[in-house]
Image (cartoon, rainbow, N blue to C red; front, side, top):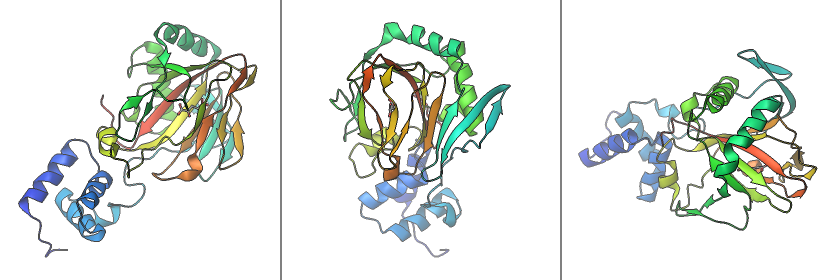
Length: 274
Ligand SMILES: O=C(O)CCC(=O)C(=O)O
């Protein structure tokens, strides 16, 4: 390792890429695309960024969330019950994450701003997509006192700083609308991967909060596990994943009667500054 010879241009590129917000994992992927050997890249990145070799390229190199522990977590005086736990992948059904008043206020504040929901294509561009037929909108981080309160509650519950979160997203589904099975992590083999992970790195966990109770349907399904979490006002499902974790496949199941409102929080391994 001491004899490793690193070209000055490569050293400079690694430092600039790290400075732009990419973690060691992203840098390894880019080096792999450029034809570098995996073990050699780990040693070079470890040396240039002055990080222990053991922490480079291993799962969990970025910040991870702490999974809530049953039966209850109290965050700043607000009690959240853990009513279901799956260990692999880590999934928790959480009761009482939001109060009824908070749910109603989020619906009222977001309703005038709803637009057709989008997905991210393989190039990292936003597109309308027949697999996702809801309407939605994003709050900016800390946009309102209520949004701030919820962001801080999630950060406390999962032990991850608020700035690792993407803006809170509100979604509204009518009967027949759904989000077909998908992953929330970004696929490193897609050409748009570096663009979508340039800020904040990879997604590591999601929290889907139910703002109302649909009359029928509209749960969140995990088809690889045969699990459906029922959408109940004020409750939520939290799930964490590694890149490539196929068990985290999930879907917003079609609403059969009534409507469904949710708030989604996606969390990144590093600070996400829009
Ligand atoms: O609607 C749901 O229950 C899940 C939503 C979802 O998977 C997403 O927004 O990524």
